Image (cartoon, rainbow, N blue to C red):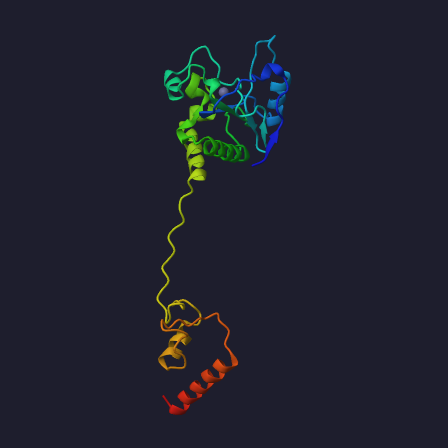
Length: 247
Ligand SMILES: [Zn+2]
């Protein structure tokens, strides 16, 4: 994950109020073609108490990079409204959701609000990381829409399946599906030589004809251990005797 720290220094965009994050809010920037840095620069230069247009978010993500504007444990102004969805207030046990939610703004190319693959994958990775660090469930990921009813992020409101897919991708990153169990090895001629070992057939032949009896009482063959000169000549003699015996 490539996070660029460009913390805002505009005092009107910084609350300096400490929060304990309980969830993550996804937004679209609603400005097609703008980059993460463009949106960060708007928070930095376009927001003022005089204009009363307070706006900020903790992160802005485009297809190339993730820009951090506000430290996670400081309140940002991204879901303030005159009224809130009661279920959301209940979910996060608050009356002012900015005081406990991390805001992530996502860039997009056009007015459908569809996110590029780079934006999507960085957002999935960042959100999974946040959930892991604060020990939050996937249900702590919400849309701006879930808090205030605003059509944000547009593509996840018009097509809720997109939001579901996002949460599923986060879930997969947090709990990767376990690898399929390995095929048990087929039994071989010795405890340490499985049936699919390249020497299995030869070891079976050596045991059958008493060229070798293995190296211990369990009949281990020690397939990777070097042979001494004494062992080699014994093996040769036994093979020679076997051939002489005409078996
Ligand atoms: Zn929003």
